[in-house]
Length: 152
Image (cartoon, rainbow, N blue to C red; front, side, top):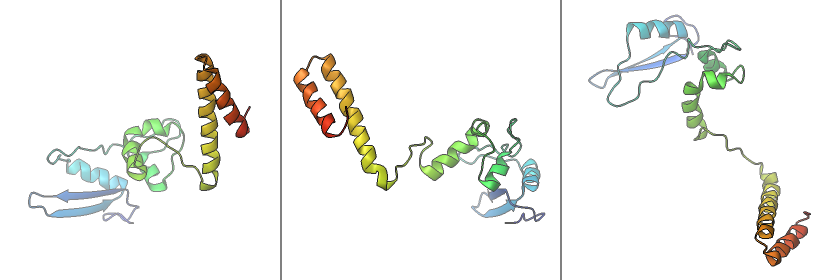
């Protein structure tokens, strides 16, 4: 998509809403967007949070990546970018993944294997607790179950 003012690549989408509810949508490049925002300061509406628009200026001191470069390419430059752009990345990650912490995903063909490994780990923990509590009959039952599953 091209900037409405200079035909560079669009990096900023601005929607101005006036008191009557009428709106104007602008698609601007980084330079035109910065100039526009300097001429038209953002006024918070109601109790909506005011987001930061400085991320295009901030860059990683390790790899030199700017946040707008990330937005254009979809790729970070180095591990430090997660720290530098943390405030900008958290809402994006939550919007895309529904959470901000990686939970992982197991391929369907490995789910049974993972469940089996989790069962074995749980049984080993129960065995350890049974021995500590001197519940030897329970411990031998758990030991036998582990042997059935192929664990020592």
